[in-house]
Length: 263
Image (tube, rainbow, N blue to C red; front, side):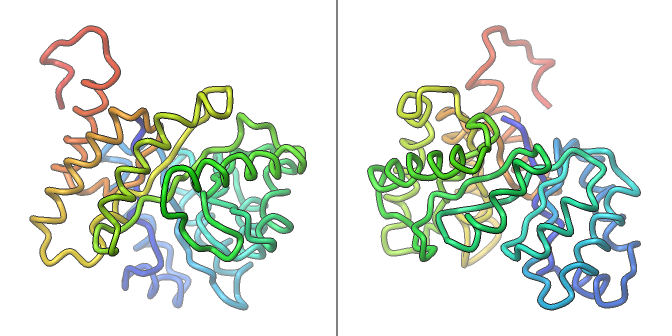
């Protein structure tokens, strides 16, 4: 299970201010800190960026690529911003992402073929509603793969995000278990070893305090590792969570163990 830093996001005040001032230093300091913690990739979560999509996304991509060669997830729902991001890319990229929403099928999915990039596919309805159980997620996954292949995107380039729910939702804990079932079953359903990705931070949305949020994230990331998740988006600067994820991956996949493997 590869760990991806989700720390670079426009909701952080210092990153939002950096964009407003076109000051790369705060962005680069954060990226360097994430790389020092051993992240496999950086999720560049810019938000929609509005009418300045080209300028904003190009700023982020140039700032990040100046200090790291790590793979980058270009994380935006704005097709114009996504196009600017893939055009500015020098590092390996993953487009994050598309769904059955018509605009994303039309504007974002074709970028994966044009730029030969992997792309995240969210298991969401066309109106962005989250399915409520595993059966609905399976139906969406089948349709999502059909759309990708029709667009000329190889099935191996699609990384499925089953959409981890906040536990605070009315049926959040049930849906969280359903996500595990989806991750375990998708390779058999689709007939090939499809890759999966999940955002761990979604789980603890509106948690009353950091300690309880960390407790559920540590426990759930272990369950995700056991289910076979390939990529975990998380706070790479949280050393306790990262250690839990790393050890979970060892226990879930390795055949030979030594204490030297434990970080």
